[in-house]
Length: 369
Image (tube, rainbow, N blue to C red; front, top):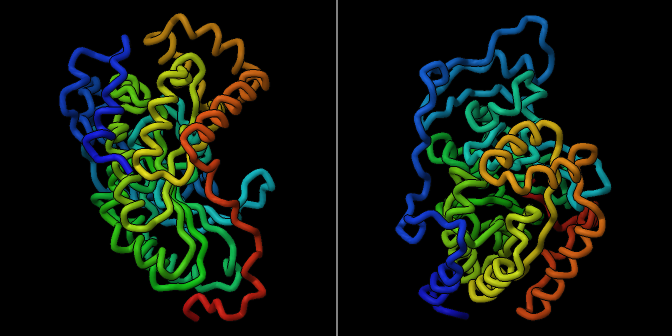
């Protein structure tokens, strides 16, 4: 396994033309949010709505807990921390998202549509963050239900469980504390943040008693480009460094290049740097998906492209205006490119897929009942 200094050298090796002049300087973990106009600087809780129902009504009644870094935080009186996923397109049954909204503000984020369920604009996704109240007690109750026995639980499928709000509210850690007390769980965590290392003690305990995998999402090795696309996410090298530390602790961890952005993050040289860095960090897998762009995300991403990358704007409009997916020919090309890189650097595709109901018949797995 390569040294940490070698890893940093690999990530700095590519000095692309889109790097800002100060890109090689040390950047803060969570950079400050630029000042907005005066109208948006005033905290404003969701508008009350007596006629709203479901999650929209809960959101409208959520009290403002704090306001900092240009974002507002609301305490959401959620009824459950585990969400059942019945789609056959994903290899897991349960999802956990301790927060609604994500402060990282990734321009392409597909999950912006989830704010529309609360009758909020997708553009508020990174400015109005909802913290699910009583995450720990809910996890204590729901994880001990026979309904989840043996089913895979995916943490961070829509919003990042280690976004900056986690430092203040600790909802993710509260859930992991409950998981670490049980046995026989199947859990994965997906994040863009090396803050996951804060919970290394819990992850070790969870790893000893259950099946655990951790995914670090890294879309590009270019710091300047990453800062444009993912304004408040930690630097790419910090994320890859987190994989190294997790692997040294014996925890299965890998890198997800998700999404691959056509014309922006799909350069062969860039992907080669990421694959080499993944190998040097001891990553178990190196996987990718091409950008999926929903209507709520297009409203943010298309104007961003027009301003920052106007030469690509028309191509994206042609590909994504009528469909959320890139052409199959392009998806196939990217899949072949990653297959080549995995073979070259001896990396797996991704963790072995969890089997639905695989543990239901194993009576020795009592889940701490």
